[in-house]
Structures are given as structure tokens and as C-alpha cells.
Length: 348
Image (tube, rainbow, N blue to C red; front, side):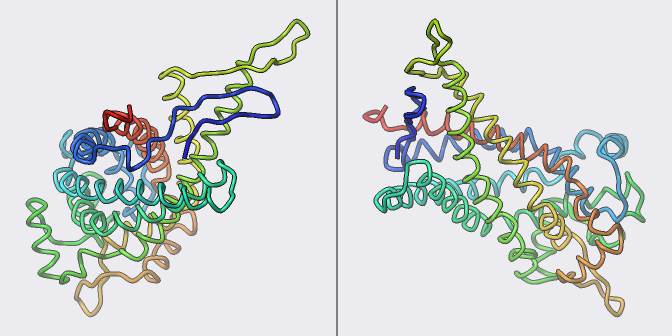
């Protein structure tokens, strides 16, 4: 599928950088460079994820600034990177699964929809939505256990900084590191304990990814169309003549980043309540007859409503929106750069 478009109404042509399909990639280079690049992205965004997670499990509203100061005061800078080692080790295989499912689905569905007679724009939106759905489902097989372990490490010391009463149900276990957390979770809850919230993770991330990738592809083309028309040449009467616009690398990155940030806003608003429920299911415990037990979805929802009504589902929205926007912007620009670095020599 080519990303080159021609706007017939304005008689102008906009040469968008060509899409690099799965068969054009050097797979070993793609996965090796991808692991390195996305590890750097994860490291830069991890402190925001810690803030979001701690806000979501707190039973009382706490601002980002207050939470940040408390972490810095009681735990130091290392507090912003609790569980990062575990998260990073899981990110590498999860990203490999994600990128493989994304590219294979996008290529196959894109080809099929074009053959069915859909327009290039519609075919690309459908292909991106299907790719986002399949990649999220594949990656959650790895990401859910990593989330459970890393999130417990993120919150286990936050009672020191914001008051123990605000986190009454956080697991009482103390973990030395990711391996110790893994062992204790399996010992106390069985292997199912590592997949707490798996169902709701799929319900959160699969539609979110589908909406994000479909929105991104449509917004990407829409912005390029407006950009090309705006820069179109005018004659002496002020009318736009037929023009050919070829963007440089800076314009390409800017449009990719803007499209990603806009798509992230919609996705964050739609899926925030599900993400809050998912995080609490993975981190918090309930109490029954003096014994701690995993919470159910209904118990989690009831607790949230009791604590602050529907608004409680949106605790951590600011950090999540910021994290998603920055992550998506960084991810898509890094991802497109990675694909160009990994293109087979004959396809360059």
C-alpha cells in the first residue's frame, strides 16, 4: 500500500513518504534496533507511568505535583524508576510480538481491502485498525504479567510518601526485586495471579489500539492534505495552481507527531475508566474473613464509585494523557525511523 496521494479537487499532488511493508524489512535488524530504540523510549517515559499508577490506586485524589514531591522527598529519584528493570525485560519480547503482529496484519489486511475495491484512505484505516487490534492482543500475553509485577513494585513504598491510609488495600507483601515479586505472586495466587486483569487489559488496549491506529492513519492523510493545499502556489488572481509538494524529513516528523498526539487524546478519554479498573485489579487486594483475596471487577467498580463517583475512574488522566501523547509521538517517529533503517538494501 502506497502512502502517496493525489488530491484531485485542488489539482495538487502531495508526495507522502512511501509506506514500508513487512516484506521490505530486514527482520534481524528490525528487531535488534527496535529493542534498543524502544528501551530508550521506555526509560524516558517511565516516571510518568509511575505517577499515573500511584494516582490510580490511591483512595483519595492527589495532584501530580504533590505526588512527585512526596516520591522525591521520601524515596529520591530512584522512586520514579521502581520496577523499571522488570518492565524493560518484558518490553523487549512484548514489543517484538507487537511489531510482528502489527506489520503482518497491516500488510495482509491492506492488500485484501484494496482488492475488495476500497479507496486507498479507507483501506489504510481498516488495515491500521485491524493491525492495532491484533498487535495489542498478542502483546498482552507478555505485557500483563510484566504489568502485574512492575506495578506492584511501583506502589509498594508509596505509603511512605502519601500516607498509608490512602492505599489501604495495596498488597502487604514486600518485594526485593522483580524476581522476588514474581515468585511471591505465583506462590500466593498461583500462575493466575500473574494474569490478573488480563481480560480487562484486552478490553482496554485492543479497542484503544484499533481506534488509535485508525485515527492516526486518517489524521495523517488529512493533515498532509491541508498542509499541501496551504503551501500550494497561487497565480496572479490568488488561485491555487496545480502543484507538487514533497515534504522534507522535518515536515514528515512534525506531521507524524501531531497526528499521534491527536489520536492519543481520543484514545485516552475513551479507555481511561477501563485502565483505572485494570490497574486496581492488578495491584490491590480485597479482604474476606481476615484473608486477602484478589478483587473482582464489580468490587473494584463499587470501590471506585464509593470513593469519588464516576470521576474517580479518571484519576491519573493527566499523566496518562501526557504519557500516551508523548509515548505515541515518540513511538511513531521512532518506529518509522526504525523501519527506514531496517529496509533491505534493494528496497531503499
